[in-house]
Image 1 (cartoon, rainbow, N blue to C red):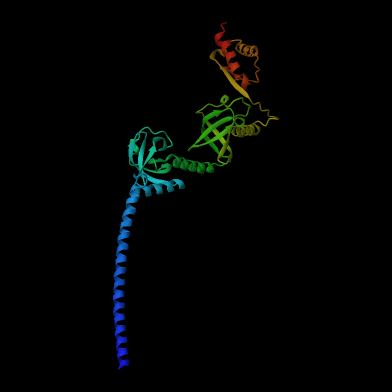
Image 2: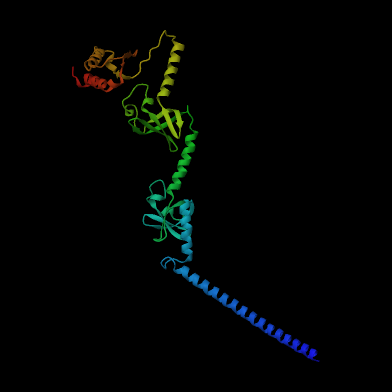
Length: 331
């Protein structure tokens, strides 16, 4: 009986222990659920506080979206990225365009490669721009289209320059004259240099002796290296000279041909020359008195003109001497 009773008590104790264990488990489960609920509420409170903290960051002036937008703008600025924007407003001396929702200012001087007076046509226009100033603290965002336009122009010019081949003969206009030569505009933004030594067959003191700005000239490409085009007028004159010599040899078959360069030709023309005595004498006396040497003389069969050749540097003095003897001097 004792053994039986002992077993009974043991079983009873075990049952009590199990009941207590179940109670303990239930209490633990309830405690775990309470802890999870508390944690969830705490996370919600934390997220709310975090959101509020974002709103007051940046001296309490910028919200989260604005801060993130400026971070993106800083990245774009560092990368020097090309951006597509639309002009949304016109202000004093420029226009407005949005980047990541932030107002950006494009100065009028940065809209185009040329000067912009009227900004109204730019409203609503799509542009490719680059950020040149990104100052989040002062809300200063400045954009520019000029750099991209310049890069595009330079790239196009590079391609056009590459297409110009040595030996080509082109027509251009004298753009600017320098002491060392003249720049010739070949069109499409491409220009080349005619060095002073390549302007004339003769030696000249300054390019302006032969050329003037705006003058149309024919030139030959004698070099194209590193985007710099070298031109020559002299080469074409030499080619023409050789053509003339070849024609003379073919038609006249002379024993020798002597070329005289650096000559200026002056024609003295008058209907009364044929019947007026001493015209040629007065002409040559005037030139001799001015110490000008006559290198060539030619008279047409009609006897209405006399053509003389003098050195290039004597040209102006010769004209003055002839004018004085026939116009200013009364016989």
